[in-house]
Image 1 (cartoon, rainbow, N blue to C red):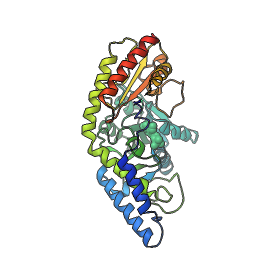
Image 2: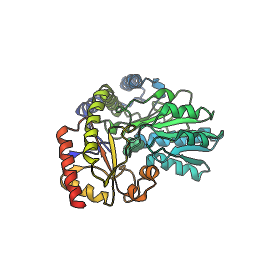
Image 3: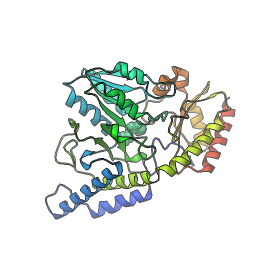
Image 4: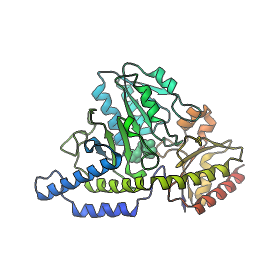
Length: 373
Ligand code: PLP
């Protein structure tokens, strides 16, 4: 079996699972309970939060735990809209965003907010000139992925934040789900940032929104006491501890993993480049090496995916969360070519990917390609 869909999900790391099991057993009491066991659990969660904050170079109070990136994105977008809606009702985003960004934005459009989509350049990065044109005095939020889930384009967040300074009330939210632990993310220029553990060899059901201290949010989930006032619910101590372990491992191994994955990505690109029907959508200079998006000219990408699956090789056609058999929005925005956007394949890599796997994948891909031609 060769798994090349790491952008959709990663296998849980044994050490992460061990942490989850140990913490679940040792600190089983509710951290909000007013007795000694509760106080021990609370002290443990506070220490873990401090350590996660140190890993990310933020303050512990700036971490809001959520059930994953979808919830964190919803909280950032709806929370800002509700809190700052009196200052303005204009939001900017891009065509590269995940459905957990476009979903809450569509919801807000129905509530009277205006959403503009900034153009992207031929390399997939945000067109900063267009962003400047779209900015208004009533723009309260801009939301962009640090690395998008389909093309894997790394955005220049510092340059984006510089442009946004022209709108005094505009906050920058960054979905860093595909970036944290893989590429550097400059948190200095970000007001709100989303990430999730299951893209980092962590466990499903835990993620976070980083919210800089000066910002207020209207909660999406109301209820009792938790680790912050912005998201209620009994703190999920063992999941939080397991996410800390996943983050720790990903950040400490980031540089070595990046080097390895870059080399594997380059090999796949070189192997596919000679084929005129294969169009590479992820620009080599600005894409994360973890994601390689291609289109198959005149061929059905889903058939290629099935053929590879018959050989126990697993890749995806698009992001796992989008409707099948619809054009890829990022590729359509990039190429303005509907056929190209309907025939995309996403190959996503990991530090776990081996040289042998890449060799086998390339040979299998070529064989399937020859059959389909
Ligand atoms: N944002 C991006 C860029 C993603 O790639 C994903 C998952 O594919 C999500 C958000 C949603 O993450 P979760 O599954 O943790 O809700």
